[in-house]
Length: 519
Image (cartoon, rainbow, N blue to C red):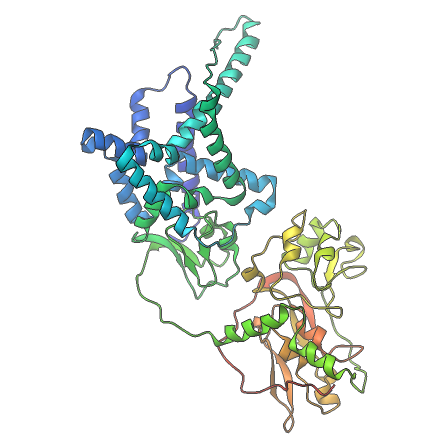
């Protein structure tokens, strides 16, 4: 299935399960029949395992159903049936509402050694000394303790408060119930796990499930051979990174693209957020992929090493020779739209949310962000705008997207930022010194991190720039490197709405640009 209806089904089903468990633990009048409670407990993994071990009957074999479910559908147990997991989902959503930054998850490497060590130690301790450690870390047990020690007393206090108010009007529908406390030391473990799980889920999504929880780790091992999984249609995927940013398990590496099935809990957020319909959920194909050497990526990496120092090889060569072009350029740059910073999504959305606090301008390491005075109109005065005559947007920098307090600049993963097209480079041949002065150049091509600007034969031994707009990201390296004044021979025209650029093709140009430029 490729429709986000899967996500809706998950939300409705898991919400009902969570409500049922809440009612079970806060039912201080024992109104819920025990047979309903036993039905809920049947599919709780650790309680079912322990009950089966004690009774030796398939009537207590709910964990077998969970294992089969995991083999078929992956770790759906964690999203559909585990009350602690569902509670983390609600908590992470609250975190996203309180502070948009919390919604930025992104791909993170798994805590492989830690999670499997915890699983191994838990199994050994359980086999040698008993079930204390497994019940200490079991998600259902943690949830039960939190509800019993903290949620239930709160519900009783609310009940007593309402009962007191109604009693003044001679309404005795509710009766006063004494709140029974426990020794203070008893609250230490539930409180510690409440803070740990609550804090991690509020800011990091499903990190507890994929770092500490032994049940999640064990089911993750089985999910390696699951039949149904999240799948990518690589031909449709634009590597925009939205799926990774919404993945609360931080298990989607969208550049490969690949999903770590041991951590994926099948929440289907990625399907819902993918605008290209490149992600679906279905039976997986186990065909091996042929290894392809990405030569263009090697070139980009080499170029990026120079950009780490805030300068390009072109800038180095310019500094060595220093003289300016002999003639002034004559054709004015036809910029139809300003370039708003990465993460701005588009001019309208950005202008609507930006409060011109200058925090991004202050933190920009290259100084390419400048306060606007006419680019956005009167309403956008002092909002940041990209000025590529002053500098360029560093290829491997996302600092402005990380500190924006109003979410005018949405958080961007570095990989996503490298494929976000802020604008397109435009070439003015009549300004280029290759044409006007019949001299070799190539500053724009040499500085371009994606090689969207490349050199083609011109006259004799001279080569001249050409732009492949599909892979241009509008970073401004070419515009800043161009030596012509007062108008540039190549400039970036902004996109009203940011779009996804294509990945550079694995093609190396046979044209070689000079290392030293004569200007």
